[in-house]
Image (cartoon, rainbow, N blue to C red; front, top):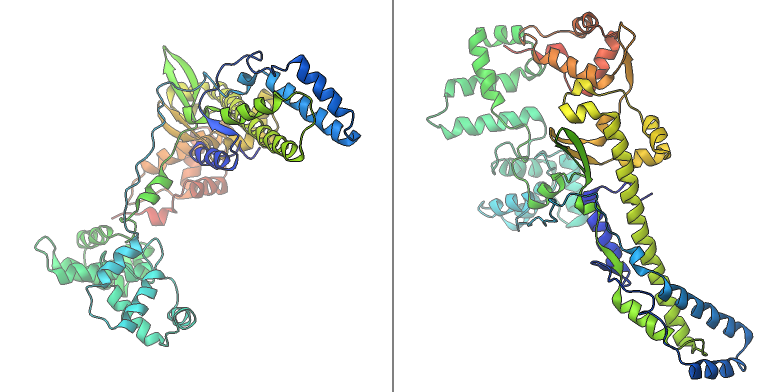
Amino acid sequence: MKLLQVPTAALEQRIKEELEANPALDEGQENEENSDELGFGDSKEKEEDSENEEEAEPEDTREEDIELSEYLEEYLEDDTASYKLSANNYSADEEDKSIPIPVEDTFHEYLESQLGLVKLNESEERIAKQIIGSIDDDGYLRREPIAIVDDLAFSQNITTDEQEVARLLKVVQTLEPAGIGARDLQECLSLQLQRKHAEKSADSDHEVIHMAINLIDKHFEEFSKKHYEKLKKQLGVQNEELKIIIDEILKLNPKPASGYSSGANRIQQYIVPDFIIQIKDGELDLTLNSRNAPELRISEHYKEMLKSYGGSGKRKREKKEREAVMFIKQKIDAAKWFIDAIRQRQQTMYKTMYSILQYQYDFFLTGDQKRLRPMILKDIAEITGLDISTVSRVANSKYVQTEFGTKRLKDFFSESLQTDSGEEVSTLEVKKILMELIEGENKKKPLSDEKLKNALQEAGYNIARRTVAKYREQLSIPVARLRKQL
C-alpha cells in the first residue's frame, strides 16, 4: 500500500534504496533457466554419507537442516522466471532518460558572492551573512531584527543590536535582484521602483516612476484594494494617467527571488506522468509509463550461492553454514516480496486508471471539460472491486498524460450538481462555465457573485450564491472588486 501511493517520479528512488539495502535484488531481465539446470546433482554416495552423519546429530539440529534443505529444494525447483517483473502495458516510446543536473550556486550563495564586493569589516560581514541566510525562497526577510540579534548571539557569539541589523539590512537590499530583503510587499515594490529611479535609464519615464513610488509609499492600501476613484483624487490624476502608473507597478516582481531557481528546484517541479492515454484510430489507448515497469530480478550471485549450498544435499551443516543459508533465504524472500509488490502496484494502477478512462471516455476523447461526468472514489471502487482507500492512494499525487495536456488524476473526481431538467452534471463542468463567465466579463465592471449566480441559473444550473463564492475561491479567483481594471 505504501508503494501504491508513491508517484512515478519518486518510484525510481524507492527502488534504488531497496537495491542498496538488499544485495539479493538486481536490476535487469531474469535469465530463463529451468529447474533441471538448477538441480542439486547429488550422488547416491553423498546421500548415504549424509544419512550416516545425521544419525549422531541432535534432533533439533537435524530438523533445522531438513528445513533448510527443503527450502533450498523448493527455491531451486521453483520457476524463478515467474518473479521476473515484465509488462507489455507501458509505452515502448517512453525512454528512461536521466535528467542532467547542472552545478549551480544556491540563491543565498549568489547573494553572498555579491556581498564580497561591499566594503565591510569582519563583524559586519558576518551579520550581513546572517541576514542573507534568513531571507526566504521568495526573497523576503520575514524574521524580526531582534530574532536575528538573538541568532547571532547564540550561534556565533556576536553581540549586536537592532539598529546595526537594520543598517546592514539596507546594505543587503542594495544587492541584486532589486527588492531583495524586503519585509513585506509594499517595501519590495518600493525598493524596485527606487532602484529604477536611481538608474535613470533612458527607457524609463522618471515622472511616472516618481508617481508610482508616491502611490506605493503613501497610498498602498487603496492600491491593494483597487479603490481607483480614491487614488485619482489623492494623486490628482485622470483615469489614463493612473493606468500608466499602475502599469509601471505591474512590471515589478512581487517575488524577487523567483527568477533565480537552482537545478534542484527545477527537478522538483518536473512532472513525470504515471499514465499515458493516446488516441489511436479514433480509440483510446492506455499505457503505463515505462518507469512504472522496472526490470527487477533475484541476484545471479545469490542464486549461485544457493546452488552451492544445495549441492551438499541433506548432510550435516556447520553452524556458520546454516547462518549463511538463513541470511541468503531472508534476502531472497525480501527481494521476491519487493518484486511482487511492484508488480501488484503496477496491476492495481492500470486497473484503476482503465476504469477512470472508461468512466470519463468522452473527456479523454475530446478534451472538453464540460463532458466530465460526476465521479467519486466510491464509483471507481465499485467498478474495480478495490477498496476506496486503495483507489484514493492511486489517485493521489498521480498524473496522466493525455492528448490535451498532463492532468492530475485527483482533478477528475468531483461531486454532482443537478440542472433544472433534473440531469446530474459534474461540479467541474460548472466551474469551467464559471471561469468562462469571469474571463468574458467587462473588467471595468466585473460580475459580482450574485450576478454570476444569476447567469449560471439562466444557463440551467441550479446553484446558490454561496456555492458560486466557494467555487470561485477554489479556482483562486478574487472577488469582483479585486478583478476590476482601469
